Image (cartoon, rainbow, N blue to C red; front, side, top):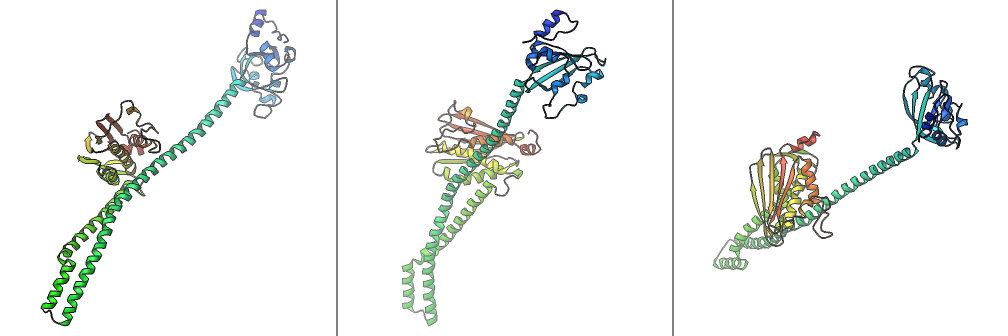
Length: 428
């Protein structure tokens, strides 16, 4: 390595001091001509000290600037020195002797600020590694953004799958619930058809006798025999019962379909409004009737609560997730109590079961996405996670208290106007 260009009239110790710097140091006069270059400057730029001394500082910015445009001398970043400018700090490119661009961070200080043409000291350091790290970091951020978008899409798909799984479970339950009333309505209508045919034969016989103009004792005996053969007295009573049961069956089908429609809130999925939570609970309980049938004794303890401003379809999904977990925790026979109360400005929906309970080490994880205690293929573990997120979005909270072997109590707390605050973009 060639020796650094000496600094005219500078003490030897100052030259030695500058040569110890890891940054390049250049001295320039009022015409931007280099008068001094330390060892680091020579090493970074690939020029000898003799080649640098006397050269124009502006030439290091040529032939091209980093953005591809050439610097005319009058537009050099250092032209300010001629005007007596003060401290300067920029990032630019110095061109090395081998024609390669060197990313540098440049600090320039005039020797006598405010005095044009007094010269300056220019310190620069190699920032290629930093630039590379910045580029890598930017690429990492871009990859992270892409990954986040994919995760959001995947999360949305998982939520959709969870809803579809719920719909599938609902469909199975609803098919069972609808088949029951349809079954006895169909059976009743078959029996009703036979009864009516028998009654019509009896009426036709009367009409024949009436047309003949006489109802003598033999004819009366024949009518009595026919009545006995078709069990006329039973038919008179049973026809009314069949009609009544059929009407009840049709009404039950209508109620089940209405409950399913209310539960799904078809067509009003994103409509917020003042909602009667008791109506939501009843719709959900009707939909889940098959889950309770034969195993769960259901008790309702509804209090006097006002409507809550919320998104009904999402709150229905919350009720369904909690009630479904309560029903599935009961293996043979048990009890589920649904209780509603008003506590200050919040409505509390308490769902308590006498099931198997939740182990203490498991309890903190029940709202984690994908966490489930069920076997593979029996649930994605998103039900309670989605429920928790929904309640949080409504400005509410969910509290869970459980004792293994003694059951679980879930308290859903919803502020009366929590949904309104959400729509306004504020915190409830």
